[in-house]
Length: 450
Image (tube, rainbow, N blue to C red; front, side, top):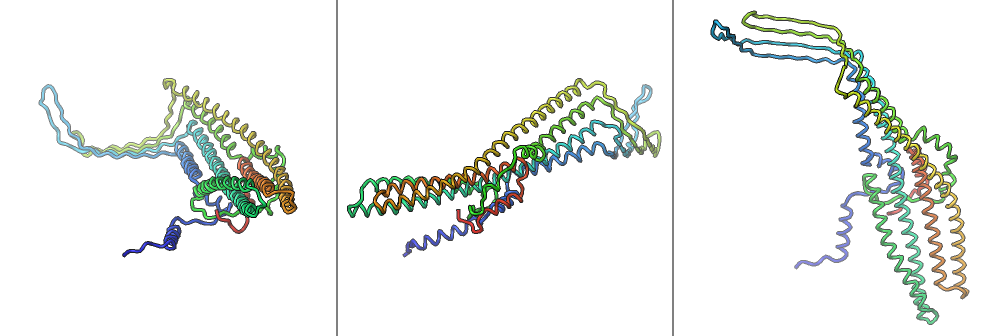
């Protein structure tokens, strides 16, 4: 008779199933960034597009280099001849052979020269897009990482608050049983406890979502994250300095602005290339031709021809096609110019917003640190008041909630400053591995489970 598995064996089986699932690792911010550069799909898409765009340069260059072509033909000819005074005369079938080779060297092709210039500018724009997307990878990684840490800290604060309320709820039950308490303290504590449990469910879901987002970026499972060590964090070290300096730096190094500028240069070269369709082209041509024929009139006839010279092509009229292409290129150039200016304006606005957010965030962190000290003192005073009989457990519960909210606001302000710092440097184009290593130094060496 088969026996039912005991709860212990069922628990062991569940653990084995978990161990057999996808692997997961402890990870810090710097390692997350490095892995994301290898596995982030959006970044890899931009890289592939840039590699494809790079091929436009050799393709444009080929139009200025020599072109060699060869042609070989072998045929069997059947011929008949009919005249008025003779019947149809059919000649025997005979073979013909033709071999030819031609070398063409462009000498004057302005369109091809401007097309090469356009291709180089487009490649430069594509490379800038890769750098821009690399900065964007850093922003996505930092946002997901810090959001996961914030959710974990919120859960930790709620857990601490829940344990305090459970302790006070137990004390309120004991006091009521001893005749020294009131029912109101029990009901208030229970209501707060139920609220916190509901909040914990939502935060746990948020943790799973943020960690899942980070796992997609890094391309592997994440078991735990290195947490922020607040003792290493000095908010003033993230002061961005003067806004004018940042604006000048963004004009010089911003990958997005550089990409737009390269697109403007490419569009101007496209105008010149379109206008060059009105101009003549000049090529040097060298040809060799050999023809072998065994026909009814000449037996084993072989003709060899060698020619060299120049070929001048003068466009006269193409039905308005060239003029239309010029107008199209001019319009596209205007669009590129407007996009370039719009990118500069948007970058300046975003840079000022992030600059102000960091400045205000630093001041806010210091203000919340002072508020936290005051909140700690308020909790201590109310706890002493309970012993003295001037305060109730409900009063202590209220100030503890206020203290936890201040702690949460302080924690959130820290992560906001760090995330904004990453976004600011990304906009300028200076968010590299060195900056991530600096942020990574703020994390505790021992990772904490997610």
